[in-house]
Length: 63
Image (cartoon, rainbow, N blue to C red):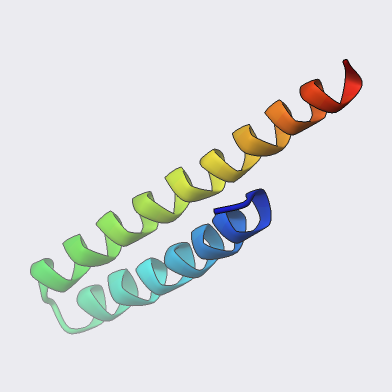
């Protein structure tokens, strides 16, 4: 996957995770809240992966 794809998927997972976490809190369901936390963390990692790819690409293009 490319840099932008990773960033987009990261933002998507982060948003879905936040929604799940909010639903879990509203419904008093710790299992759903935990799923949301995990999905949000996955999104953060995907965004970081995309940023790292972009940084590597910039370094390669400068040389």
